[in-house]
Image (cartoon, rainbow, N blue to C red; front, side, top):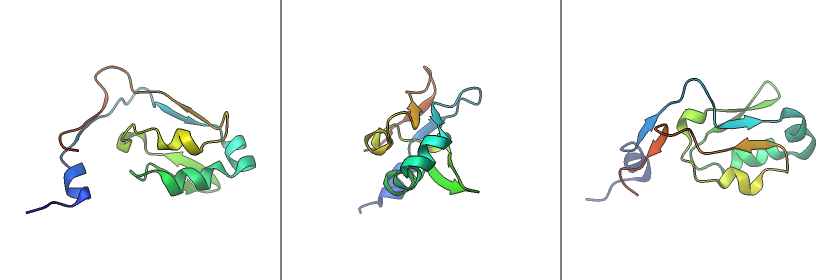
Length: 93
């Protein structure tokens, strides 16, 4: 029996770093370049959303795939892997 992608992703383990986000968004650059809409559109985990004219990130759900970095305008996104022991641990691909 095959499982769906959301079912497989639900098996992953996420350890949230409540002291430090690994994603920082420069709102001015996002607005000026339209990067916000691109981030919302391409993120496979749905980390980004627009709220009250700004782009916000639910970094706890990040799959650390780097797709956002491929579409972000220079300077609009500061992204690094979470500190050691935090982030996603994949249980199944």
